[in-house]
Length: 389
Image (cartoon, rainbow, N blue to C red; front, side, top):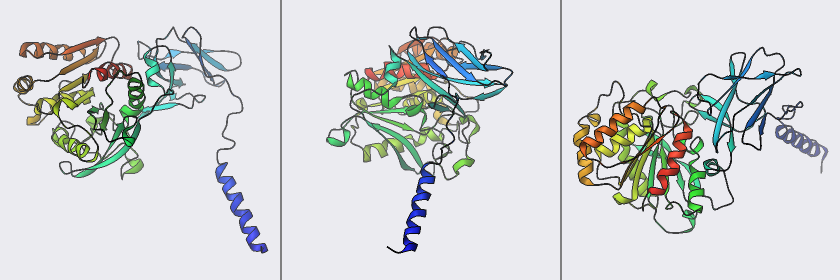
């Protein structure tokens, strides 16, 4: 072997080593236990910030939006311990001298709209369903379909149940829609759909099904960072985007169904299709089902927005007539859930009165708390076992 070749190999290996070790030095030498799950289901948080003048914590278990102050010890560590928490997935952030940060000692985080949150679980109940267990797993894919109505290729997330690739069976489908500020990533990350479905299927509590999670923002192809705009499109609430309430997304929804029924092994009868959504997705589910009474036997509205200002499409007109036609076409389940502290609660109650006046049957679950993912994950846990029976 000649000398030049040996030198080249040495530099090649050194370059690979340096690249592989890119993050050496970024590890924290002065570590603390920033998140401690106590035996009584309280949680203790710690943040080392000796120069900070004030540190607080904000968690979605709190009944107020105001962050709770943390106490500083002599070594510059700020501490806070919660009350006893019920089983769930929880999200939190720290506020250091007015700046919101995630927990630097917790590598597990989630994005909700344009904010990052650290996360943890409390076991012993519904929180168990949001975690991975030693059971058969389904697969999650992101795929693109052409929308001629919206004049673009669009991305959606699809869950297929355990064993889908190894058999020739056809499956029922749940179309699951996100809320304002969400995208095709929301339900699979914040909503823990794949874990919920894996665990419910493993326990025999649900019919194995495909779950389709499309992007409900009519003017966008995909989630932030997944479009040709790349990093110039940052997360925002859906009402800030064009096409928010012009009805075009509802009009385009048949393209999603057509794509799924063409490229996936799914059953295509009305009694093998369900649609559900949270908040804005509940609004979409309400009007897609009302305008297409022949499509779905199972409808779920999770903290649904019943109305939006500025709506300007016939899709949203004559709702009573459309609901009556939905009743005439018959359906298996019309399921509605809302928290009693939700800012949409009064609108939902009025909508229930409207359904009563029209003689439509429904199932209603009034939970506690507000407009939060804790409720929507729990609603999916209740709704999914009722499908396709």
